[in-house]
Amino acid sequence: MLFFALLAQAEHRHDATDEAVMIETPVRSAGHLLRDQSAILAGTVVACAYGRYPSLRARYGPAGQTESRQHAVYHLRHLADAIDTNSPALFNDHIGWMKVVLEQRGVPGEALNHHLVCMAEVLRDEMPSWVVEPATAMVDSALALLPAMPTTTISFLDSGDRLAPLAREYVHKLLGGYRSAGGRLAFDAVERGESVRDLYMHVLQPALQEVGRLWQINKINVAQEHFCSAATQVVMAQLLSRADTVVPCGYRVVVACISDELHELGARMVADFFDMAGWDTYFCGADTPHAGCIESVVDRDADVLAVSTTMGYHLHSVQELIKSVRLDPRCANLHVMVGGYPFSVDPALWETVGADGTAADADSAVALAGEWTKDSATAPRSS
Image 1 (cartoon, rainbow, N blue to C red):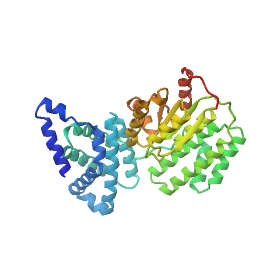
Image 2: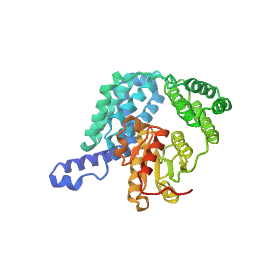
Image 3: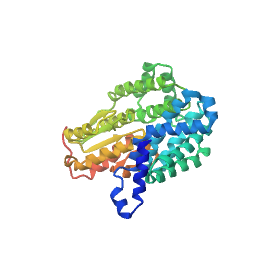
Image 4: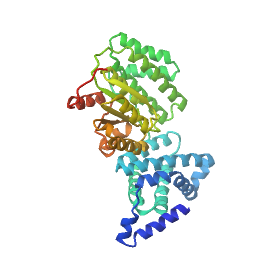
């Protein structure tokens, strides 16, 4: 653990004088350091848990220890971005989600409690004080809340919405492996007069949320979840061609998922809604590098950049992209919108990452962009 020994020496030097503190203050944030060291720390956390609590080793064995280490890496990465965005809600939400995942697979909350206790201890032993303070505060908060966190979730299809029965049938068809039959349900609804927008918002979106929930509670496997997502992408492409034709509004938007973000369906829905509203829409898709995103904005002369992330541990990447956009003089008049699951957990995050606003869904994304362009001095352009 030479790296941490050197950090400890550096921290000791920081305490020598005020002048030393000013000179030695770390350039990187606490979250960045924690993220960089997550793999090493994860191994130490699991070694602590399996050493201190023999019941874990007896019950889960070497395979469980390997899986626990993978979980620890993700816990630390979520913690890192929660620290850098000053959002305890993000880490608490992640731990709550993980409790459901584990409980539904026969792993009691006690094991997660042991894991978090060891995580706090390892952080105190291995990290410098300027990382320890915010990190352990969040871990301790999650530990305090853990007993009251639920062990299961409720269905996204029991909302009472008039299209909920159609959404339930759509999920049933996809989970049976019947992509064409699922698509036919949506296409028949359009022929009966349902709008494509309503099908996106009240059938496809809750259906995908329900599929994710079913994986979380161990009712379906990863292959089924992936099948449903892939099938819905095909259905969306076919539905978009059935949407009402609109007059181009003259404004342009680039929609992208942040680098390393592989969940693209939500962003795809946002892009399709802009398309249906008459925007000149350029959808970059999943895992868009920062440089490519900025070049797309410049090449398209975009008015709005809509950035999506589903995973809370990608927020630092959102922040870095927006910082790069702000520093590029070619993007001086660009409005930046952010969206995705973390921004529903903590709605104030859009300000923290430097965006101009956030939208809870595709419909509100188009509405927000409309407000921006309505107030803009830039006149709409012909496509």
